[in-house]
Image (cartoon, rainbow, N blue to C red; front, side, top):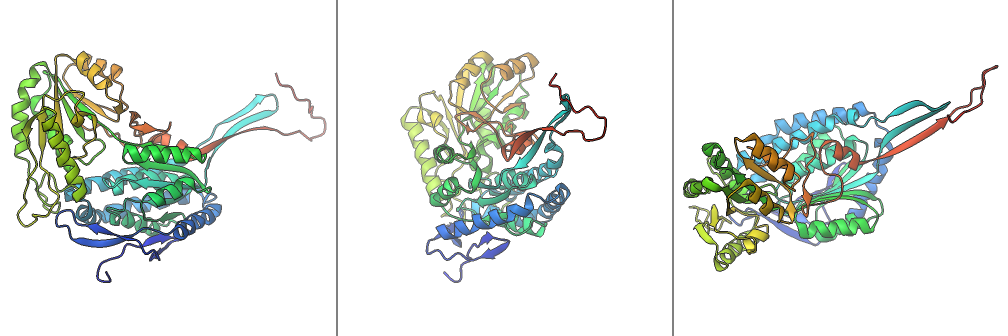
Length: 497
């Protein structure tokens, strides 16, 4: 074990080795090689991290907005300079291709750049003489020590959706990255220190459910952000709410994309290849259901042939379209759900099981998989597969497509491809989903708009990014003030008219 790299904790501005006896393997998904050991932090180490964050809050909350802004400017620059190194570490632990990982770092930088603008968004309001001699104004202040729990699929982007805004408005932070691929998040945290974050403002602890629960239940944690699966997110939200904490939980999805018969065929089909199979489908915004309307149903064989030609290889191959799934367990689950689809009568038009990559025979590879004839009561439609599996549903009108999609309990993202503005407007106004793409397959908004999943895909009123994130990590105080005038001859009678 001494020859294998051990992932440190980050507490009080220092990298420290955990004293835990519980170390878990970080595994290369292409080879099954153990490439690092990650600690499951002890309760005492979690307590130590929170205590450091609490101590740092006393001074950081009073740091100038200019200082906080400068740290984020520095962090954005450092992330750009280190994009390739972070992407390669991410690819090795997660499996996504390096270009895909570089794209993730780019979206993380976008989140940091948004945090630079917090000094503008964190402005209060002032009303002079709201009543005679009485002024009313609001101030937007930090909450205190906050926490974030991120999923394995976007360890850089999700971390950058959380702590940059939280600390830019004056909070301190404890981050728990996924134990499956912790290195990239640690690299980001170390760069944040290099950018100028004072010791204790950002702390990183590793672990499993016990660590997440510890964050949710600790009395000093004021707010929790979680992005991950529905099962875990529901528990996180319930526990945080039970202990009186503010919580946002962005959870599972079943994203649909509608292709109308008047759509640009080339653009629509090519967009769907990346949306359904990019990152091996391990994205909460991946399109997992393709809804073909009317004559567009005839395009399905063409789409299947395009999917068949996608290249599956290790993430370090820049020409690969998708790499391995993150773990052996994930591969087994996806392949089991593919078999479930066959057993329930769906038409397996393209089977991605049994993929062998020369030299990486032990890799967690599953190729693009396409099912036709999918019905709403099938398991592959109702469960989030989180793999490169696309279900195809055929309908005859945009109205039927909207009705079908609104029947699904999830509401993370949806898109439509059409050249008809009226159809697009009808779709936009009547679909019950939080994030909508029009001729855009994966409608993840830019960072200055909030991520706005809805229904069973989200718990909590406020989402990450945008103005909503600023309000989530702050509290608004309203002050009503009256000052008596003391100058000789001044009438100090106060009227409430």
